[in-house]
Image (cartoon, rainbow, N blue to C red; front, side):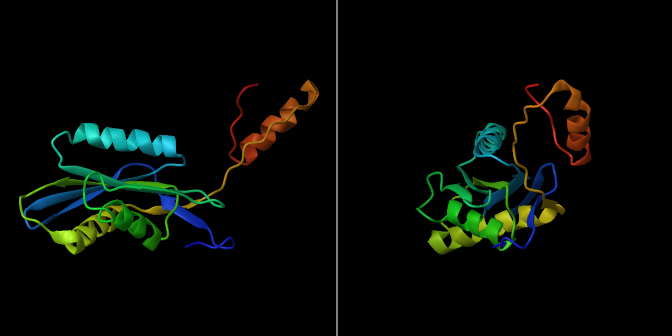
Length: 168
């Protein structure tokens, strides 16, 4: 895990995808960067919509610093065999602000708890390693109230530091 002195790293923008077949079950890993749980839920819903016949869609989400947010789902798989290994893969790759979903199309052969853990965690790592990473620059929201004569300076500072203005 990243300490306060180390930079946080996330995935480059876009969808990162890879897959593998284990004992006739097809596992598809899909990962993207996202800063909020709402964004993660939207991504997971789109994965479910894209794979309506999938047996399971397990996911892991890690974001933020102090506190770190983590969410996971086994989606009907035995407890701890889907979401937890995906979270482990995200942390193992030292990433933050990432959601990773693993879609399983069952091949009819039981994998057992250990097999599922290896399959979900391994597929997640494949997807997380596909694309390049980027350093995550922490952002803060600030509210500024000033005379209109200072607006030019404020907008210059916003542009200089890659910020955005809203609710003017």
